[in-house]
Length: 306
Ligand SMILES: [Zn+2]
Ligand SMILES: [Zn+2]
Image 1 (cartoon, rainbow, N blue to C red):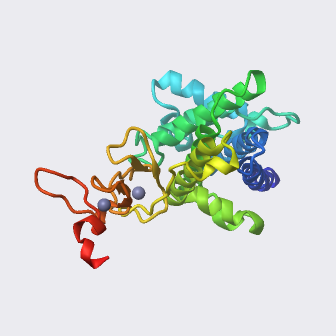
Image 2 (image 1 turned 180 degrees about the vertical axis):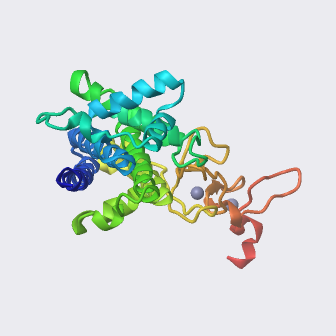
C-alpha cells in the first residue's frame, strides 16, 4: 500500500515539475525543455506502473512480470490474456516476491507491452489510443537522444509532442481511474496545463508563436528607421477569428492563417494596390472594372464623393 501511494505522489510531483520546466522553456530558456521531457517521461513511467497495479499490485515487480511473460509464451497469447489466465487460476503473485528486500520494478518497455494490449481491444474495449503509445516511444527516444547525444529536435516539435503526451496522459489516468490530473496540478501551473490539455488552445498558442517568430525574423537586422517600410500586417482571420493571418510566400493572396487546420488565405481586409492610383486599400472595398482593372479604389471609382 505504501508503494502505491509513493508512486502516485511521485507521478504527480514529476508532472508538476514537467509543467514548470515547460513554462521556462516557452519563456526562452530552451534547455528547460530537456528537463521538462525528463520529468514528463518519469511521470508517465510511474503512471504506467499505476496501471499495472490496477491489474495486480505486484505486477510492477519484474519477477511477477516475467511470470506473465512466461505464461504468454507458453500459451501463445498476448500479455494481458496471459495475466487474466493466471488471475483466473488465482495465481499467487505475492509468493514470488515474498522475503525479497531489493526488488527490481518493470521497465517502461515492459509496462508498455501490457498497456499495448488495451489498444488492440483484446479486452473487448479499445481503451488506449495507439498515438499515445507512439508518442511515449518518441519521448523515450528523445530522452535518450538528450542524454546521450545532441538535442536535435526543434523546440516546436518538442512543444507539440509534450502537448499530445499531456492530453494522452490526462485521458489515460481518467480511463483507468488512476487520478484526476487537472485536480492534481499545482495552482501556479494551472494556466500552462490548461493550454496543453486543450488541443485547440495549444494549437492557438503555437499559431501565435509562429506569428511572433516570423515577425521577429523579418524585422531582425533591419534598422529601426527602415522598419516602417516593411510591409507586414497581421489580420484577423475571418475563418477562425484569431489574429493569426500573416504574410506567406506560398499563398495566392499573400497571406495565410498560422493556425494548424485553418490555414485560411482569404480576407477582405488584405490590402491591395489600386490599379489606377496605386494606393493601398482593403481588397473588400475595391471594385473591378470589366476588361480593364481588377482593383479600383473607392476614390478612383467615385472621385466626386471625395
Ligand atoms: Zn484562421
Ligand atoms: Zn485609386
